[in-house]
Length: 128
Image (cartoon, rainbow, N blue to C red; front, side, top):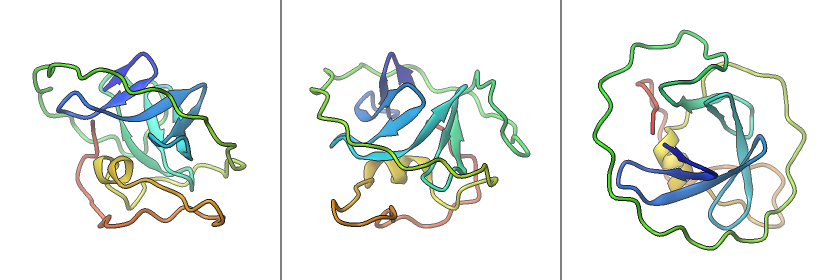
């Protein structure tokens, strides 16, 4: 779910930041994009979407009932946000699970391309 500029998981904890159309990890690394309710990875592939998404989602699956809203944890301090890479053309669905992608998203400072760790491909609905 999106709480102002905080992306929260189903437990109510902040797991990422959204500023403009950029998606940032809790450490301030650029890890993708967010546009019109749709989350994209660094390859500009759809990671997941919010129920009221207006963005283009390829083959949008039917949605399950939303769980009740959790108690929201206090927002952590926003770190210094780092620059983002050039956004490639949209390419369909990501092979990453949104929850795992946000939980383990970190980019080594010297590395060019983001590779999430401990993330297995998922073919089910990827929602927050």
